Length: 388
Ligand SMILES: NC(=O)c1ccc[n+]([C@@H]2O[C@H](COP(=O)([O-])OP(=O)(O)OC[C@H]3O[C@@H](n4cnc5c(N)ncnc54)[C@H](O)[C@@H]3O)[C@@H](O)[C@H]2O)c1
Image 1 (cartoon, protein in one colour):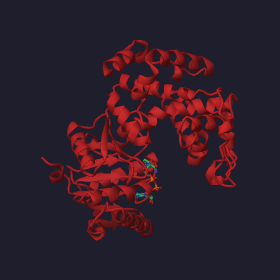
Image 2 (cartoon, protein in one colour):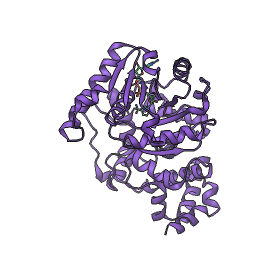
Image 3 (cartoon, helix red, strand yellow):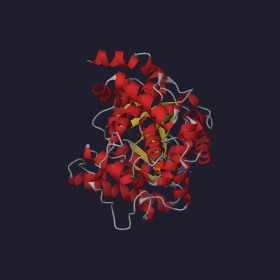
Image 4 (cartoon, protein in one colour):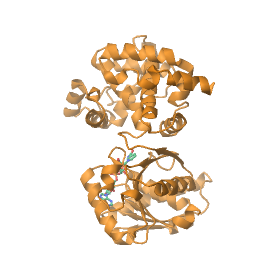
């Protein structure tokens, strides 16, 4: 059966950064969409953002009839109106387990039994969220990336009890809204894209902690090999508090190696959060930091960042979370990378990767950098040879 036969009405809960974008792409694709937030002003703000975005898309020739799209969007503060008769509910409310569970508990009572439930959480366990409902087989993750209108990747995450039918329907649904679904077969912290880049964060803050190189030396080195923005500037741009909280979460859920270094904790406590407070790893008071490319140094090896990501990607294959091809797709579309970790591994070579991981693990005393079984047992080498 065509997915449009199964899904006609979509309810999006939350009209914030993600919710308004999700509602917009679903309405553009022809679905009837109810967008719900808790206050009139939040719903209105979400609708204003959608209108502004649709006007821009019209100028670019990507949307023909703005009025038609808007006629399919139904803003509301009434939860029952939003989810009653919905075939799919996508939740994009704040990233707090208790809030999300409370929302899902209520929705479960109001939605029809066959309705599929999806959370856009970027870190919480899908299995745990599903427990707030009586339909764990029809509960999954649909992890969109920001900004939704531009980013093509959507991770479709299976919780422990998610059924095949719900996954299949959502994969088709995601394709029907013009996005690329990647199925995350196991509900692991960080899912795929965010998980693969996680050890790079540990490497960066360990280099800074040990005083191996300064932020401008690191960024100059990375910019020199063609990156549009260095990792330190990016950390400031994202917010050091966000980096800190992500590391704390991974410290609890993946490995104690993710424990944020003391200097980072101190900076966060003192409100040195990066761009948004004017000071972080850089001083932002006069705008974007000027990076002097002559500061590029061989104290930092840019390839190390790729190597720790390749190791993490191999761990995901080992755990049965996804296949190498899907992991490459997730990284390319989720992080706008030209190559995925397995494609990069080909140019570095499995033996070189293993050797360097052993060195990094020793150098920084981090177990997460130790080459994983998939590499040590020669499986990565065999895979790369097979790919030719
Ligand atoms: N922002 C990102 O880059 C990003 C990327 C991927 C996933 N996510 C995830 O998406 C979710 C939403 O994030 P966001 O950035 O859009 O947050 P946001 O703060 O911009 O929006 C959340 C919205 O939810 C509303 N809300 C609160 N309680 C509600 C309820 N009971 N019912 C309906 N709406 C309610 C809030 O009023 C707010 O408008 C989070 O789980 C987040 O982790 C965010």
